[in-house]
Length: 90
Image (cartoon, rainbow, N blue to C red):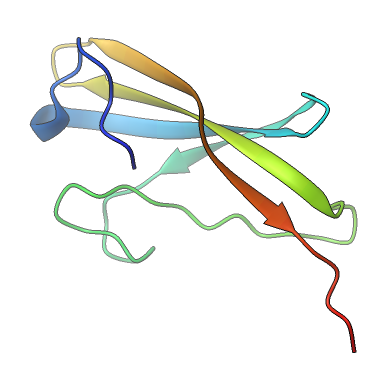
């Protein structure tokens, strides 16, 4: 996760989540990010698994990240990351 902007202590993040949008800007869903060691994370790195289904379209997806520290300060990074899904050729 990219460090949150000023206003949130990176070492004291209490919770984090990501909001997924498609390339046309349509909102898809919120995912809770975990620092639990199960998502390839740990030591202050937050992650999640996004499971695709038959309705998931090929294309680019953008992730807005929101983090809240233990003092209740919240910061949001719009379009902090993106990924592109491609159709696998057999």
